[in-house]
Image 1 (cartoon, rainbow, N blue to C red):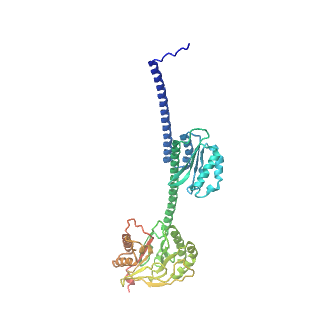
Image 2: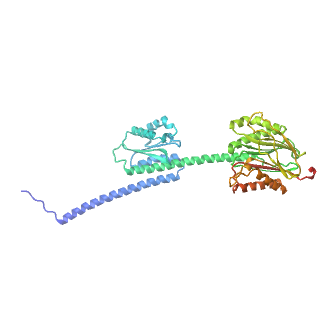
Image 3: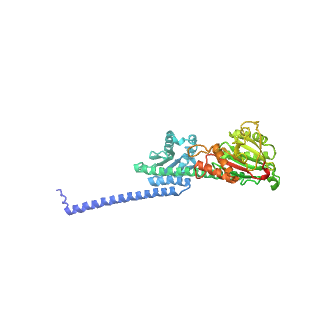
Length: 465
C-alpha cells in the first residue's frame, strides 16, 4: 500500500518561498557589495596612479609601479612593460615586470635584439607583432592582453598582462582598465620627454647667457677719454649673443693715461655675417687677432691685410665672412687714417660745409680670399665734425610696413642732430630712438645686430682754419 504525501499547507508554502527569496536576495546583495567593493578598489588604484603621475618627477620610479598596478587591477600575477625611447628604439634600461625574476631571460633577449636598437623600431607594426610573439613564446600563455602606449600619435611602448591559469581573462572591462593604465603611462613618458627638452633648453640658455655676459665684457663698457674728441657707442644684439663688434684701442698701451689720451687710437667696427652664438664666437676670435695687430703700429691697410691672412683659414672652415672698418686717429694732428673691408662706410658730417660724405676705401671682405689688398684713406678732422660708424643692422632694420630704415633716412637724421649742435651721446641716443620708432617695437627687438659709434670733434678754436 503506497502512502500518499501529505499536502503542503499554504502557510508552509509561503514560508518556503520567502526563505528562498531571502537567500536569493542575500546572494544578490553580496554580489553587488562584492562588485561595488571591487569597483571602489579599482578606482582607488587608478586614482593612486593619477596622483603618482602628478607628483613623480622620476620617470623610472613611476614606470616601476605600472606592472604592479596592472596585476592588482586585473587580478593577475604577471605584467610586463616594454617602453620605447623618444627615437622609437627599445628602452631596455626601463623594462619593468612583475614578478621581476621571471623576466630575466626575456630581458636578455630584448637587450640582444639588434633590430630594437634602431631608430624608429617601435613605429613599425611588424616590430610590434614581433614583440607580441616573443612575449607569447616566453610565457607560453594564450591568456594574454597586450596594448600599445601611445602619446600624441607616437608609439611610446607596449604593455602586457597575462596569466598561466585558466581564468576568465580578457573581458572588455579588463581591456579598458589596462588601456587606462597605458594611456597614463604614455602621458608620463611624454611629460618626461618635454621635461628633458626644457631642461636642455635651460642649460643652453644658461650657456648663452654666460656667452652674452662674456661678450658684453669684451665690448668697451665705456668710451675712452681722448683729447679733442667726444665718443659714444652702443651695440644692440638681435639675440643674447651677437656678431657685431666695435672697439677703441691705444696703439701704445704701455703709455700713461695722460700720454695715451693725447696719442694715437684705433677705432674699429665690424660685423660677422650671421647672428647668434657662431657669429659671436668668430667675432671674439677676431677681436683677439686685431688687438695683437694694433700693437704693430702699422697703417690701417696693412693691418687689414695681415688680419685677413690670420683669420682666413678659420673663417673659410666656418663658411662665414667679416666686414670691418678700421681707422686710427692722431689726437695731436686730428688726422684720421682708415681702411675698409667691405663694411658700411662711416658717415662724416662736416661742420664747415654742413654736408655728409662717406669715408670709404677699396677692400674685400675678411676671409674671402688670400692676399687681398686694401686701400688707405686719410682726412683731417675739423672742429665740430661728426663721424657715425654703424653696422648694417641699422640700415637693414625693417619697419612695420616692411620698408627698410635705409642709409638715406640715417643720413637725414644724422644731419638734423649734428646741425642742432648735440653732443656725441645725445646724437647716439636720438638715432636709436628714431630707429626704435621706425621698427615699431617696445622691447627694441631687431632682426639683426645693430651697432653705432659716434665721434664728435670738440669745438676748439685752436683747430679752426
